[in-house]
Amino acid sequence: MSSLIIYPSRLPMKIARVLQRLFVVLLIQAVAVSVFAQDNVQHEYVDLGLSVKWATCNVGADKPEDYGDYYAWGELEPKENYTWENYRFRTSGYDEGTVRFSKYASIYYNGMYDENNRSVPDDKTLLEPEDDVAHVKWGGNWRLPTDDEMNELIDSCTWTWTTLNGVKGCRVTSNRPGYTDRSIFLPATGKYGFEPENKSADTWGHYWSSSVNRDKTSYNAGVLAIGSGYAAVKVTFRNHGQSIRPVHPK
Image 1 (cartoon, rainbow, N blue to C red):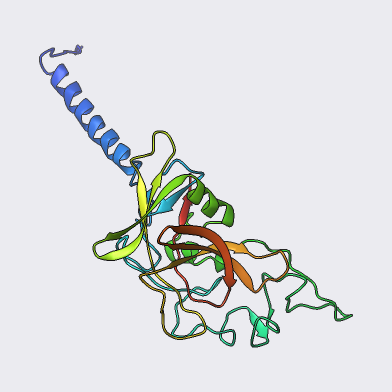
Image 2 (image 1 turned 120 degrees about the vertical axis):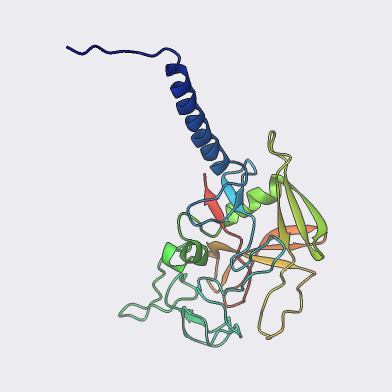
């Protein structure tokens, strides 16, 4: 009958190797959830201590200072001209006084009517995932920020007008305890309105929110406007071409 033989001199060496491998695995996992963590589609974000994490780059950009692509609100592809005529959800009309929509519509401006020709709002207040270009392009849980999340960014951070690699914009640094060494850069991307030229680039930045304006009209949606000494959440026409800075839930 054979007996179990233990070699004391070899056992510690095997345990050491196992522990070393385990340490390497844990180190890799720790890096994956670091401040500049990445999700499974390899887009970086920064945890500023807020309710969501903010991406380091715009949709269509490779670096924080790159402008990236411009989109009308709720559209999924950039284009050469941004008009009511070629707006995705327009059903009729050519200006803010007459335009009607097939989706994200209030009782005041709506493309849907009942049998008595009365306006029927769809009661949608935020972009749905299939209309959210951040979610469609980047996948995972990426999405556009809401008005509330943009206001949180304004209220909880220090905004400094500066340049990054020659590009003007705002350095947004967290004021939350334990996060004051963390920041993102928002370039002054300008926007495309009713004219084909982007005349406000390098002076202003315009970033879409996922929130449609529900107060009186729905031809407007929320936008984060930034400039030298200025940052505020406003509304603007949905057909304008503007930048996208995604957020990621915690």
